[in-house]
Image 1: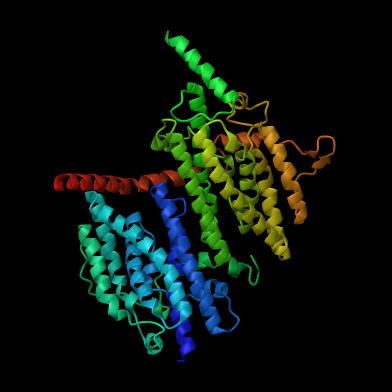
Image 2: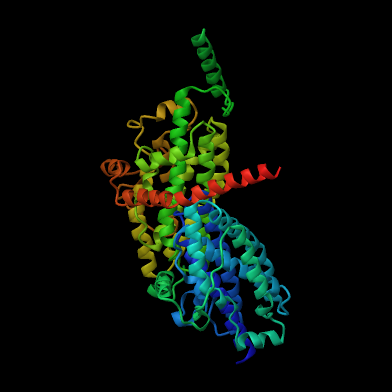
Length: 252
Length: 317
């Protein structure tokens, strides 16, 4: 694998993570449990689509085959999307939406922090801008995890079930292969193993404050980074790609 | 004695209105003025909230990254408008949750336009261009409405709505200049949205039961028919500019009145939709009720947590 190919692959992974999670959150517009959360979740979706746009634009530039950011976002096959399985999971109840966000925000915070030191100026610039947003996202999701976990008996039970369900997707956030190794050689990216312990510590601290527990996971679910998704993904893409597929080649 | 005081207060209130001095939450106001404002502002807030739904219907299918981001930002703005307006209602002593319950039981109305379905991407353009365009016609004069908190909320709302209107027009312009298929999509959407947009200004002046009193109190500054005429005058040239045809064969420019003559509105359709029998009325209210019901456990948890935290702090101190 060449280095540009590795860089393209790396950018696509993270662009797809933010795009797909932004897509999931945008399903909730107008359906939040309180008006303030309608605003907050829509705002987070907007930030994620913004991050995806910057990552796709850079990926398109690196690929240099004439594909645009929009082509990458809307016109690939399911197997070509490299997002982690966590972000494509259905919204479920508000607690599940929040737990999914909380796990992802924790990863993004540490990952972008590490990418600030990237030898690639564009990557470090994207990381710097995104980090400002992610800090706010994490504050928001952590506060809700605590409120729901330490709220009522019902909310505690619901949110614990979501933690139990979603923790099996967490290890995949730390997936690395030759793509990462190649890019680490030139310090374009860091080794995410370096912050894995910190990740679990941060997650655990909030869950403990929320009177919740991390379940012991025997079987971790992986596949997204290789383009092997859950059954939810096809429907998500059918909706997201509808216009580009129905009216090929048009400007909107 | 008491009656003398009230008539004295009423006189002072009328004087303030006449002198264009804003009425503020702590000022005395006639009960009907308060009720009229609660009805109008809460109806406006509900419209912002329900208005998220037809746009949300397309946000997951927006055709490109930029359009998706802009639409998300717009929906977020609408929710924000709902929030300021509910806050303005609260300054009149109304309870936000009770106001929302009135929406869910059908006691309170919202703009009927949102009971029409968004069927194609061009409809999202029409919602911005025509629906927000009509809303601006209504709302710009409200920046000078006699009740202070409402007037101030409207200043901010209007700035954002004006951006929404332009982004809607830009979507429609892009389609009108696009392929034959895109142009047909835009024309079809205009055909479906034109008349409902004109209906947004409410019943004709002869039929409007609230207009006269609201004008006297300077809550409203123009009648429904005046606003409708202003909207037609502003919008027809925009349609012509981008080569779309307004679906009204009787539309002609009347030199004498300096504006367009246009056909009568189908008032049967207007009243049918206002009274809850449009194609989406049921779905819109059900969606809002569902959001509220599914959020009960969330709100209870937030409340329980806040109480626990307060108790812990008290214990610690």
